[in-house]
Image (cartoon, rainbow, N blue to C red; front, side, top):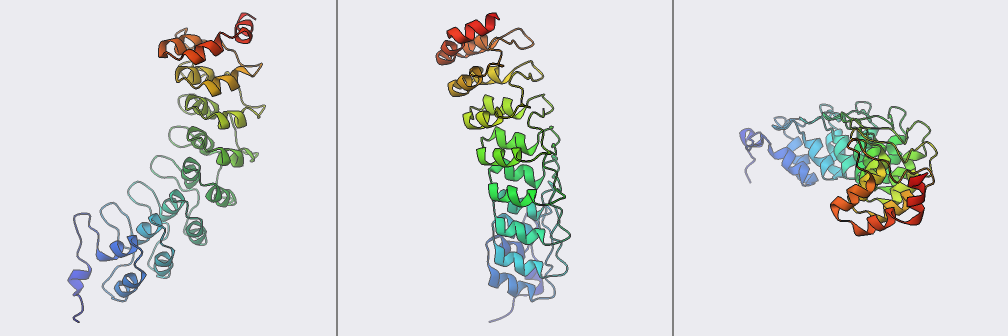
Length: 284
């Protein structure tokens, strides 16, 4: 059987990808080893998106291929793609704990390196609910657990937005996290959890004395308004169960939660806001 020519080994498709990243992406260890046995093959050659063979292997969770590539001196394990996402970011996104540990053994890998949107691997793990990966990253001194991205959103904010209760609990166990930190729109983790109907996260956040249930965003909307306008009755009940929640606090346009619920047609929320306890508290 004839050997493939050097030209074929380094030929690329419209994405400027050579055969090596294709093999790496699909976890073909034997193919990767064969290709790397040829001097003409570049083990760290990026495609048009600046994604290397290692990047593709990490993205798809192929540990054996990653170990082969990491054995090559010319491979940079911390090399980001055009969006600033490194192989570590890819492994974190997939929740591949073994791959995360494998990459973190390398000094060239920065566990707190942000992508072009300012999101770190911890943001990514929190957003996707990968509790094991979150714990691994928080075990690194270089990782800032309260670091905001370019929109001012912290890992806790991301976890709250997506309703990842386990990650929220892990992050709140840290003394260096502000659980009431506002993003660029002045929305807190509590606000985004309430707005998205994540009752479990709302309960967890409200166990903290440093979380203000009445804190307003840029438009003056409280967590209660966020829950009321989207019809999240369970969250509304939780918030109204707090003595320090103002059930009639209006936004900057003068609209209280009741107006938002009425405008959206949420009869159940309207009934809750008109309950005797809520009416009494509004009158105080």
